[in-house]
Image (tube, helix red, strand yellow):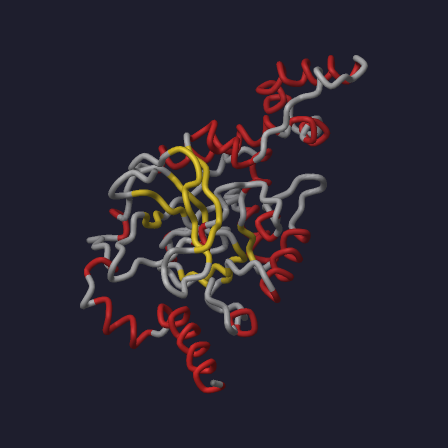
Length: 309
């Protein structure tokens, strides 16, 4: 009985680990075309234009910002006038409400992030038990449907450059994603990885302004897209219905929306270098020596073959 239990535990661990075991990957990728997506050049690794990706992110982040506007007014007051002018109407309404006696009918309705995502993009997603054997959690569409080519999630976590230490964080960690240029994203929401992310996130705050979103480490997630680390691999029976696309967030990314970006650089020097270059954020990309390796990174999952319901 003991050996049977031990064998079952080892088999479960192997099913989770084999996707990081290079010899197993080399033997199986060539036999299963479903696990491959042919890309002729790095520059052509685009399912949808970057403009559409940026538009989707800004649309979701703005809706999240407005739905939680009561808690954003103090931060908004410290921003330049050009930014405050975009929310002038909402500021006037908020001021009128604060000057009047509150009642149940006058209180602003606060939407949950999942509801905001549904109202904005037409679908909502959540972590649930996967239908794949020994796959653990997975990401499912819980409401609405996802059209082809839509952004469905972001990969959160601490970003490490190739020379930075990640040995202890990587032990038993199945959530480390390797970018094409060798940078690593630790998307684990437990243990040492969780402590490191919280520490780096608190370190890089700019006064009252958050430069990243640490809520993906909790049950009260602020950005409903920050569940990409739980998107499962395809199998021989079920092909992948999403893929990741590399995307660089532009220099003029709104400061008030950075609180929803679920990534942080491990190195303080790299983070400072990124700000000095006036390149505050970048999504996971194969930029190498052609770009700024100090930028923060993540990756997007996009639906690329058929819509989900």
